[in-house]
Figure: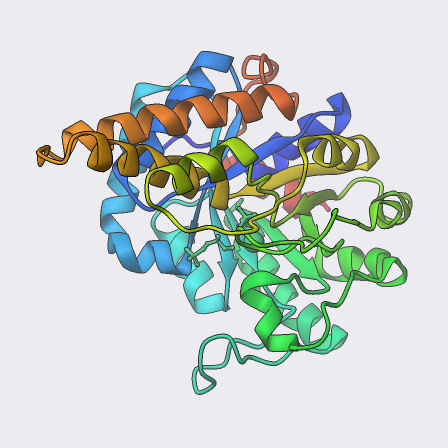
Length: 338
Ligand code: G3H
Ligand code: 13P
Ligand code: ZN
């Protein structure tokens, strides 16, 4: 599958000053919608799958759905990325089926015996060791790697019941140098899901600028970047949903984060909401409808529109033809020389 390495995609974005959305997928309609939005707006794009997505799709289906998206969009830079890889084992599996990028979430110890959501935070040195192990394995194969310093709210917040650990800029230079990561997720106060804030969001924007000074060539990643737009919340609720007080990161804050040095912007929740709102609408307005194409089709359309608009907002639109995609062999040589 001729996918684009994430390292190249984010280097290009950093030099030109725009952000690239990384959109989570679990099924064919989501992959089609993201590819269609990238085509319509001529955008490079990162399609990402979590551990849960790999389990849901049984890996092999995801692999072939992605191959179809790439075959249909040969001229678009598309990267396939593992989101929140818990360990080397899963990173190896993802690389084995052709992912051009993996995230190792070394900030948390996802041991097998601890129940989901209760895993403890890892020390700096343990995070560094786990991340370097993955980076060495991936780079030998030309695959890009994202690490994480600090922790997010949402899926990670139960782990640190009373506190979210923001990234410490003083650790960034050493972490990037010793692990060799291509991208680093910064914890600046965002969290996963639809209920990120109780009041007006306050994000640690200065922290991005401080990290940028300490690691000028590393790509930075913002997780938990869904905006949870009011129109979408209203639409879900109008058609029988119940999402009270949902709140996300305003687009203007994401644009400021991009200006300060973020290149990869992770979005899952907004996509889920667009799909849910569209399906709910059909179910309420046409209760006699039972052909899945009649609700999955509108869901796919709504998702395409949402993502195309993010591609314009993040500044990704129009950059698909800026560079020639590097092969994993070229990337292997690049890492070999470092
Ligand atoms: O970071 C989390 C993403 O939203 C993926 O969520 O683990 O439910 O697939 P998931
Ligand atoms: P949202 O829940 O804000 O969409 O964040 C998704 C994410 O960070 C995936 O890694
Ligand atoms: Zn995330």
